[in-house]
Amino acid sequence: MGSTVLREGITMALHHVTYGEGTPVLALHGWTPDHRLMTGCLEPIFADRPGYRRLYPDLPAMGQSPAGDIDSSDGIMAALREFIDDEIGAEPFVLIGESYGGYLARGLVAERPGQILGLGLICPIGVALEQADRTVPDHVTLECDPAVVATLTPEQVEEFAGMAVLQTADTLRRYQRDVEPGLNAADVEAMDRIRKSWALTIAPESGPIYTRPSLILCGHQDSITGFEDQYSLLPHYPRASYAVLDRAGHNLQFEQPALFAVLIADWLERIASAPTSR
Image 1 (cartoon, helix red, strand yellow):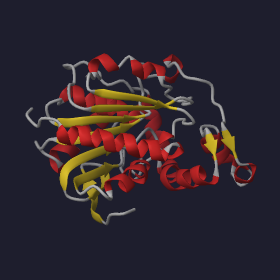
Image 2 (tube, rainbow, N blue to C red):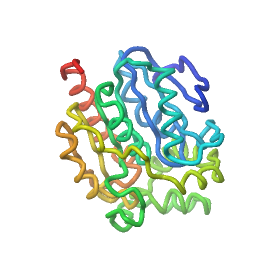
Image 3 (cartoon, helix red, strand yellow):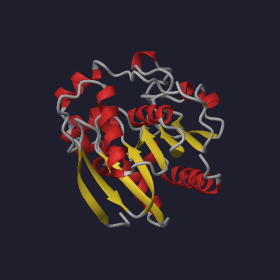
């Protein structure tokens, strides 16, 4: 990555890494991976954009963050509130969430819309929290390198090939760098406990309409969170760009990295040019 880690530590129970100085950017990974899911796709974009302090926590039970006695998404949200209070305070910040991290990010917007300068959602959970209730396409593979597939372990066949729309040497490399380490580090027992109380008490979109620049990125072939349910979010986010990318599944960020970078950059420009009054 293009930056040097300035700090690495624990706040409450959250291990985190921080890059850069300036406007805080809080990036929340999805269910089971860790902060590397976000640093892998975002740091190349921020490397040439000074003026941002990027904070990447591991959510409880994931990465190096212990779960403690947390047994619900409400407990994870409480840990995030304390992390924000300790690391950001009352300062306005930019918020990005991927998949389940997008669900948590929308919950934070419901709680503190005036503090959040812009909301970015990458393959987010939409209006239906539970997988069985979501509108999703069947998994398809649009590009497959047989030589790559032949190298996969049984675990990678399930976790990578079972999700990847583009099964290439590059997407496998990114998966092994950004996703697989978090999967191996996760506290599965604690996650199973938390999963039984997955819904937030303060539901996303329960607050006022969020009028600051937003971005909703979906993969057209995403068989995990889909792309249709997210369209229903648009009335609550009138400044949102909503993009559905072809040849992209739930790992959109490294199946369509060029489009991803352009759309994230556009969103950051819209945030920078928006009025700062809250």
